[in-house]
Amino acid sequence: MEKLGKVQKILNKKLDSKGAWKKVSLARMIERPTSLDYIRNIFDSFIEFHGDRYFGDDPSVVGGIALLDGEPVTVVAQQKGNNTKENIKRNFGMPKPEGYRKSLRLMKQADKFDRAIICFVDTPGAFCGMDAEERGQGEAIARNLMEMFNFKVPIISLIIGEGGSGGALALAVADSVWMLENSIYSVLSPEGFAGILWRDASKAKEAAEVMKLTAQDLKKYGIIDKVLKEPAGGAQKDVKKMSRVIKDELIEKVGILRKRSRGELLEERYNRFRFMGKFLEKN
Image (cartoon, rainbow, N blue to C red):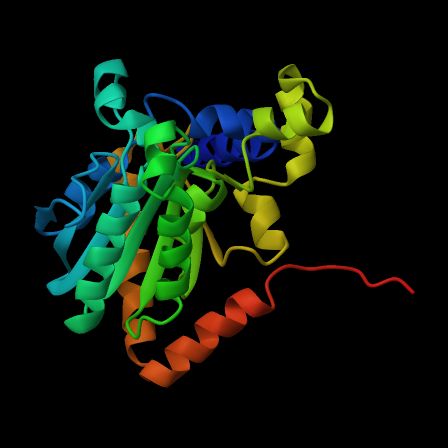
């Protein structure tokens, strides 16, 4: 057992030492567990709700009521697929306006009935097609950001794979934001960053190193609150073990946040984003 423990530490150390582009590749792996994989393993039961009551149902966003250690919570999650067919159905995890409006509908319901909100973030970004723009993509994301600041129940957001741009932030205005150690969170994709900065998307690998998009970098700069260790080789190697880690952390944190008054929750959430990050001032 002692030898196995040493091997585990060596593997974890090697994984930690991988560059940002390796983390990007791991976060995008088709084998990586999806939100539904975690939902099935973490919660005692889950009842999914559909539709935004405006246009339709967006399959790239899954949401409903679940039981976390016996306590009712609302779960909102961005969902990719486990294969090409499923990814096409889920629009590769890129929500349209109806996805964000469904999310908001469920979160408002949670606020009304005093249920904690747990969000799973996994998207390369909001869908930017013409139909999404016609139905108010920007407004839908902005409204989520605004409304989430005012909910009087605990909110925890966990980035499990990709966290791309405002499409991810629309589910990450939370009291506590966590990342799995091989997930990424950034203002846009490395390809988009390279295309803007160097007019060459093929320099995405170099862009990833510059962007500070890894969980470790973002924890260092105060953008996120916690990095959850993955099994050696990545979360896909042992979904049940990763789920147990997440479940234990969620139970503990929800209990802590439940002790805050509603006023304290709102003030701390505001201050968390108001003073986020680190910077240097020069005369």
